[in-house]
Length: 299
Image 1 (cartoon, one colour):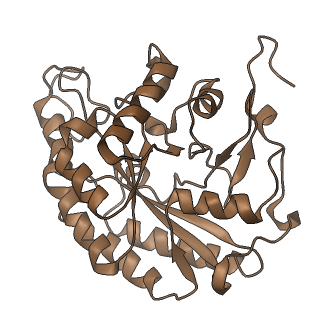
Image 2 (tube, rainbow, N blue to C red; image 1 turned 90 degrees about the vertical axis):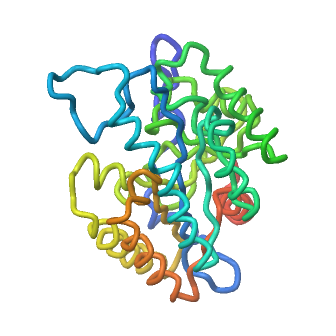
């Protein structure tokens, strides 16, 4: 039932479903599970408070300009991304680039490198800020799709809100603006359908746990936690997938896992998982197309 003011609540968008009670999902060629890797590329506005900080100012507050924290993030796009790129190339796996619309122009060499490797691009807000603070959400969603299309020749099919933020209308607007899937609803190890006021939109499994922001910036773990947690999670999901396919996400930010003391732990994670011949490295669009073909029909 919708809220009294007409808003669609999360429980209005999808019903509870126990994963063990569902019909089995099967991947092609006997594969057991899918891993997809999402790289978040953002542009931080130097005139605004920084979305995250590594160093607090001596007197507190939100100084402007905030050179230390802006530079900390900028290092990721100038150096860290290129370090990470070598790992993707070494193991011949695709990434999905979740990118701010404004970052398309700001970091064109990153865009070109991703296009050359045929990575998938998904929208990540036009700027790096809470979607609840965007003055015109539909315009933001539409503009992000337009600049990605112009830069890559392909319209984005997926969307990841900055910080996974949404308004009450976000899934509705995404469907109406031509997106096919969203990643913000981190509640399952298989894709699910979300109802909107028009047609359903798919949610592809994302992660808050195997996410470098959570581990390094919020929980303040040492760098090796990324490898340890990712492989522990992989081992369990691989076991869970014995009878029905599962999807696991790995999330990276160039300014975090692209730092020199952390990158090797991402590399070790990929090296270990890559040895499993029945694990597929896919993009979000590939996961969606498979799910549409073999999964439950749209509600």
